[in-house]
Image (cartoon, rainbow, N blue to C red; front, side):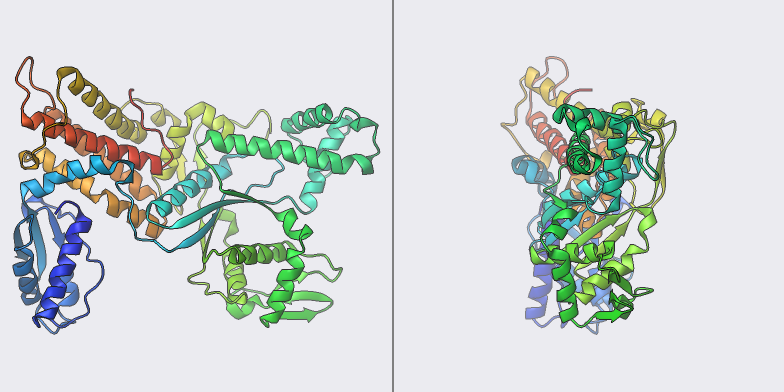
Length: 547
């Protein structure tokens, strides 16, 4: 009995055995939830499964609990099972069973924490998707951090995940973008509704370097060249910034290619076949009100031009055609109106809007003391935030709060090398554990000996418990799309480690004899190193060797 997952399996086995023996009559769930009791006096783990199933089985929950407790107490690794209150089961593991977790973690390495909760799920997750008309700014920062971390915990829980950036490179905003760069090349004023930032001059210089004769061409001849070259340079800037932030995408999907490949017209035809199209006043409409939208949406205007909504529909169908049964959209706080219309597209396409599409809305963030970009003038650039605060501090601070909660980042706190700075607190625990391992090597302590039964100190029990909970925390983070659960658990783990480090020695005092307890504790130390590193990686944060 090493991990909560294995204990959960053991409880399920006992339930099925009781069912086969005719002691209970109830459907046995595949997974039984176990959790840490609030007081260590109540054992190592607890479950309320008897309360959940007792009445369904036509039994008093305490009687149901007694049947289960008798069988569970005979399971290898279980020291005792007590029934509390109306039917809670408090389970105490044998010292050796609990301590064996340290070796399990070290041997599993980077795989510890991964789980099979979402095996078989094919997920496309789109996030950031900023227009390629300017640099990434503070509004994109939160979704870049959270989107990437959500993708990581989904993959760690067995899902096949494709992270995707939808490039809005079609439409009038690209024409205005190109004209803004063209005007800068010729020293002309910013066009009406155009882009005034200093980065436009940088893009103009890039275009001029790539096409030295660009100023000799007519505007009609120059604009397509300017548009393509400036777009390419701006996307390179966006990708570089994302890379500096530790965010990688599997797919960069071009909206323009939807149009040029005829996918928009094809989408309209497919939706018409589904019976959800109306032709009114010369325009083509999708009856999204049939599926909860507040009004029907125009796909093709009366002048024959497709709307942005038509491209959204084509994009959804593209994801469906590529085999993604689940599509997750991460949108900003100003996109609440998109939820119903995206769900309506899914329903019109024959999908289940409750299963095949999920729209997450994030709230705004602010950073105290952040300055407007010198390049863009009217925005706070992500690049400047990274240079100012560091990618690790930003990623961790953004990752430790739910997406739907507004937040303000305090730069002064993030710069402190103190325990009230969460990212420092967790990273320092990792660095400290690595220092302990190096010190052990210098003293001649190795992992050659291991005796799990020696890990009986109170702080060791707490540390082992925190280590054992990690896989279930990852699974819950994936299921609920909440990577902040990982961050908060890492802080609990770091606290347990710091307490253990202060109370228990990995090396003997002075020239003292190296004993099995030292080797065993080195396993526990290194297990903590591994879990901290695995958790930080899920948040896109580095695990430093030294601090």
